[in-house]
Length: 243
Image (cartoon, rainbow, N blue to C red; front, side, top):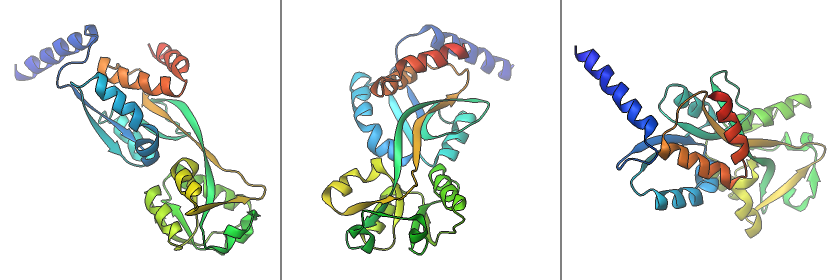
């Protein structure tokens, strides 16, 4: 009887959520984001969203893409802003923007005086890279493997902000997302060095569980994000395919 009562309560709650088109007072939900999304892409969107929905409480899980996807699949998070491509049969994804991975050096590094270098010149330098399970690290590893080179990795980290500070301090050089270093490039604390014949970029996008129903509060935030990046039509089409 206890289980039957709980099931009936959940059915009643689900019916209420499906018919209610406004966010409930005190409603809370969790979504995930990579560092770059939480720090550089979402602040203005979240500020405006919370101003319109003061009754909603958000929980944000900041982690690498792999763990964000696991949270979605296990229903701990409603959606995530992560690095693409990320293929999974139970996930839908939508690209929001392209972000270049660029070779960054400190202002006093010898490379800072060069307009460009070859990949085989980078091999001998101490490299600070993302952890091996990240999409960005995979892109870098693939480029070195294609050239038959093995990079000298002295440190692997998850935080692009920490990596940026270490490069500024001269600990090593790194391939960093442009979105995370634009301010440091403008101020001269970091320098971008072009790689001859090599380009690297990643997509940052949304991921959510295929066919999942979103209540008004969650859908409102998702729509604010896709509208900001001009992806509202593509988002609606994907949702229609799920229904």
